[in-house]
Image (tube, rainbow, N blue to C red; front, side, top):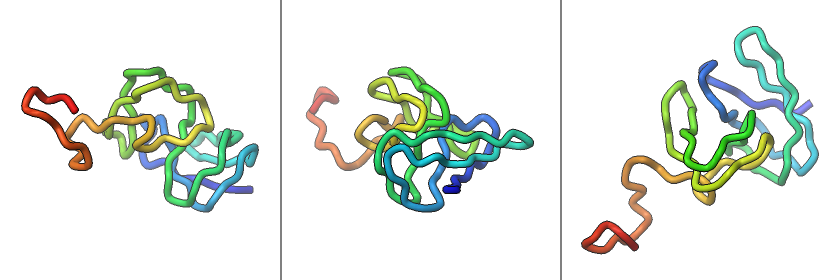
Length: 102
C-alpha cells in the first residue's frame, strides 16, 4: 500500500512518500482516522494531492497553514501544485507589469 503524510488535521492535502500512478490507492492517517484515497493521475514523490474536493478559490491547507488558493476545482486524489494553485504571496516566477497583471 502506498502512503502519504499529513502534518495537521486542518490540512486538505497530503504529501506522497513515494511515486504513484493513476488509480493507485494511498493510505493517509489524520489523527485516529485512516483514509484510503484513489489517485487520479501519475504524481511524483514529495508532491501533494487533494484529500477531498477543493473548489476553485478555496484555500489549500498544509502544515495547518494556508499555502495558496486554488485556481480551479481540484477533485479528491488529484495533483495539487503550481498548475492549479496560486500562492497568496509573490511566486517570483511570474513577470508582473506595473498594474500588477502579466
